[in-house]
Image 1 (cartoon, helix red, strand yellow):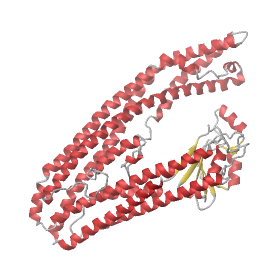
Image 2 (cartoon, rainbow, N blue to C red):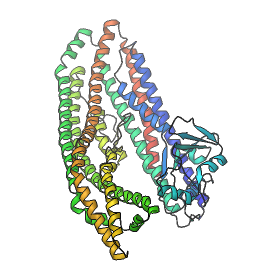
Image 3 (spheres, helix red, strand yellow):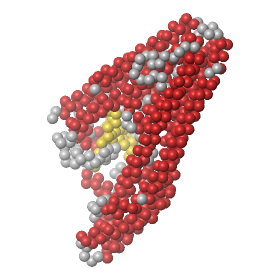
Length: 576
């Protein structure tokens, strides 16, 4: 297998994607500059069009396209030599793959014009710069030493956070970062049988097709929204240029009922979100409590599979007793982790169902919202609104806030194609249940220490230790652990109920805050669009012909940037 050719093709595909990302980002930047300049010019002509929200979204997506990187991570339990694996991927023996040693700290590999290694610490120690040989000598250890430290529960480099390796590699320059986790290399130094070609093919498909298309689709969506809003604002503005101030004021005052309808739609959707929040927060918190309380019902059966490999009678050896206690603690922690991880699956399912329902509500309210904004346009311009005027497949009448609200659910389902959520510090996949892996363990482990002592006493009673006695000790261990577990479960369930409730509540609160903000921004921008025109007309005589030309030019320039983005997107689709 020629791995160099495989990697070379991968690099070519990444280069193509990187180039398209830059081109789309450039067009978005130009679109934003055009709109921003027009808003400034509006201050000395007929007034701004209220396009600040569109500018923020365009700039956010542009920034993501320019700064976005793909981070690849392999954890330590990979069956083959992952360092050799990474070296084959990047095309150079950069990460150490010595069979007799391994890198003992988290290492981040990213592009840099110069080769250097910087080690960062989690205390007040200043970052340390090393050359590659110094890094290897200082932060690689023998597997035997690592295993012993792991058994003794000692950290290898407790004050080290991570190492940042910067290197001028073509792969890294294409926006790839590699995170190499501490892990033991085994004796397999060859790539045959590691699945490298299959991995590289899948990685290529994901990064250069699925992920890239999703990002470009998001950029296209934002560009379409920006043009639609700009075009609609211009269509409203031009008929009003010839109207006198008094008539314009009367028209604007007559729009008060319509604007109240818009805030009413906001309030109704907000209430639906809150109702869903209260229902889901209680249901999920209750399900957590019930799940925890029921662990004791199946503990004996479940826990046996976790502690079959324990060297039970190591507990009778003074030298091995601590190691046995540590091993048993880890087994128990793993049991708790696995059970709580299972619960999060059902919790996520409930949340996905809830957000699916909110997506339907968002679409319904968005349709009502669009009908009202059409009424505003028709009332102020005295002209009938024509739907989907630029002929794109998307429903351009759908408000931006609606697409955002619906796009959030697309993100929760891993469907990035539907995401219109940009520029927001809200990450669905930042699971709020990450603390559950440790819920109750400290309290229960405290009781497990008692089990250690009782288990040791039980084991020492036997004169001839054999398999049957080992099995008896194992059964007694399970019974004692079950007894202690059941004793602490009510406390854990009670104490953590509120934490789960609040976490779920915060999901919906964050969603509500962003949706409400976007609706409010939309309403404010529509009002300011009209108020700006009145203010300008009261200040000076607006040159109608010159203003029409300026606005029509703006419309054409923004439309051209959208067409260029559409063209790049369609070209990328054709290459997948």
